[in-house]
Length: 338
Image 1 (tube, rainbow, N blue to C red):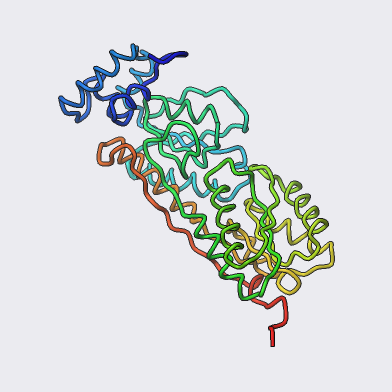
Image 2: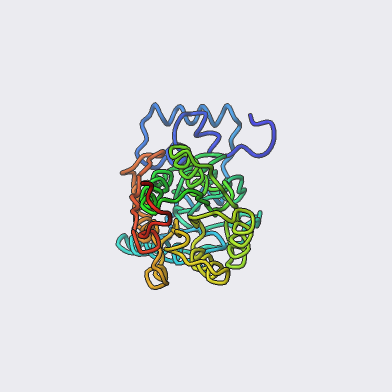
């Protein structure tokens, strides 16, 4: 038995070597579970002293016809999360499912009860107790990107952001940059950690020293402006800035204009998140198109497959992203060597 706290369904599932949906079905006598698996789950529950929560059990047995999508606080001003949520909603509608959209401030420790048959969590943060609690509950959970620490979800939709950042550097190579910098959130999400690895690895391949400046994951506009101002003051010879936060590239361009430097000729600018404004600013900014609506569709589809048994717990599906080259990285910054 666990040394402290109530034994959870996820503990039983881990002991029996099955997913928590299978464990729940075995304990409640529902679903397509073999006699051998059911016996293994019952034995694990007995060994651990597991006692199911009656309310959670009733919720699992009676489908609500609803799934939930949990978004970070930044979603209120993020085109990415708006599109992701609508992707979840559009796919759910095809299966006659309603969607509850949940947002909460980072640091809000209390997990709320979600009356939903399953949950999609966008960009889970490392060490987030609410994420851990949702994953440990009976309802299946799909995350958009991997969980960096804690219990694994039932399914993951992920993108290779490390490779995407390296491709972004490949696109920047034409500018002849020599002193690149990355402005990105701390490494507490799979996305931000992957961007950092891709940037450092790409710089190492080119024999360049990586310059990294961190912002918060939420990164309101004034945080990005302040990080850019500090970067220009600390590293005056920086000649390429890659911006992580959604909406951050516009803030970088405004700081450059005030400092008398022009993007595209004095300094290359690229964004790790594409959004509509980047094709209309001067110069238009090269970006990684994360295809958020399609990511939301894929996440909802995986959750639905887990609910109907056509996908097994532990399933991961890769979601492709692409580079959108624009004028901000099209001009050479330094003379060609003779």
